[in-house]
Image 1 (tube, one colour):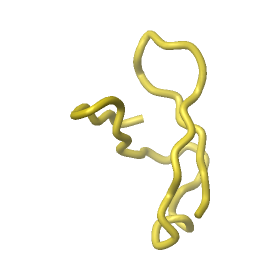
Image 2 (cartoon, one colour; image 1 turned 180 degrees about the vertical axis):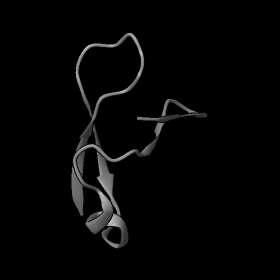
Image 3 (cartoon, one colour; image 1 turned 60 degrees about the vertical axis):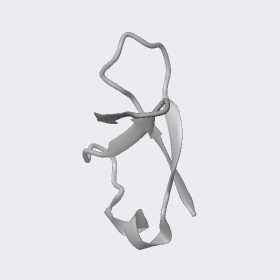
Image 4 (cartoon, one colour; image 1 turned 45 degrees about the vertical axis):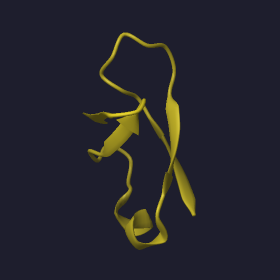
Length: 46
C-alpha cells in the first residue's frame, strides 16, 4: 500500500500521511486533489 503526504486547507502546521489503496495508487500523483478523512465524520479536499 502506497502512502502519501497531504497538506490540508486548515490552520494546522505540517502534513498528514494517508494510505492509498492499491487500486488507486497509480492515480495518486503530486498536485492531484484527494478527498481525505480527518476526525470522526469530516472529510476535506486537499
